[in-house]
Length: 281
Image 1 (tube, helix red, strand yellow):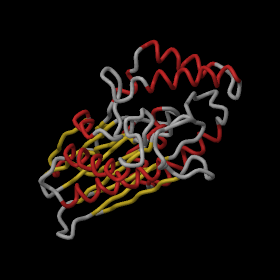
Image 2 (cartoon, one colour):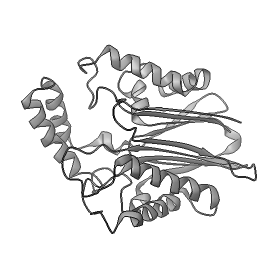
Image 3 (cartoon, rainbow, N blue to C red):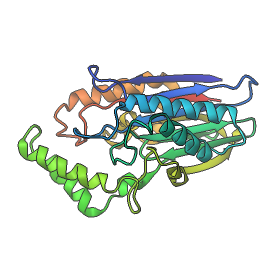
Image 4 (cartoon, rainbow, N blue to C red):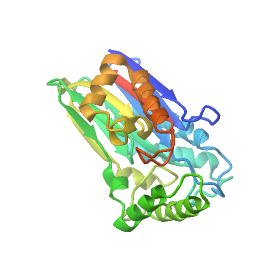
C-alpha cells in the first residue's frame, strides 16, 4: 500500500483551513481517507467564536474516527454523526444557525477487502483510478450550477479592477447572493451544523478489485484542472501517482505566481489553500 499527502496554505501568514488525514485499522484490512476544505467567510460577524481551522480539525477528526471504527455506518451516516458531534462542542457558545457558521466541503473514501466507498460534498474532488487506467472524477457540481443571474454577478465582479472600491462593493453583493444559496433548496450544500446535509452528498461504491488508486483534492489543488487547464482529471491523477501530491501543489503555485492579478485565469483567490491525498490501496 502506498499513501502520500501534502497540504499548504495559500497565504503563509494565515492558517491553513484544509484538513487531510488517512487511517488504517489495526486489523490491517482496508482504510479511510478524509479531506476537508474550510469555507473562508467574508469579513464580519460569523456567529461563532471559533476559527475555520478549529472547525475542520474537529469535524475531520470525528469523521476519521467514526469511519474507521464503525464499518457498519455508511459514510453519509458518518458525516451526519460527525456534524452533530462537532456542533455539540460549541452549541452553547455560538449561533450555529448563522449562515456564516464555520463549514467545509467534504471528501471521504473507505476501502475494505471487497469495496471502495466514497462521499463528496461541495467542490472538492475524488479521483478514482481504475485498473484499466481510466479515471472517474467524483464531483458535486451544484456550486458550478448557480442560477444565471448569480453567475452573471460573478463575471461582473471579475471584470472590475482588482483593489477598486467598485469591485469590493460588487464582491460583497455577489457574496450575499451566494450565501443565500448555501445549504438551501436550489443551491449547494456544505457541512456546517445541520446533520441532515449529509443526505445531500454524492455517494457510491466500487468493487475494490477494479480500483488502482484514489486521489482526493481540495479545490485549491483541483484548480490545476478547473482553473489553469493544465490537463484533464486523468492527467492530474497521473501526475500525482508519478510525482506525488506536493508536485501537483507546486505546479499550482507556479501557475498562480504567473498570473498574480487573476487576469488570465479569473478566480476568487489569487492563491488558495491546497491539499492532496493519494492512496494506492
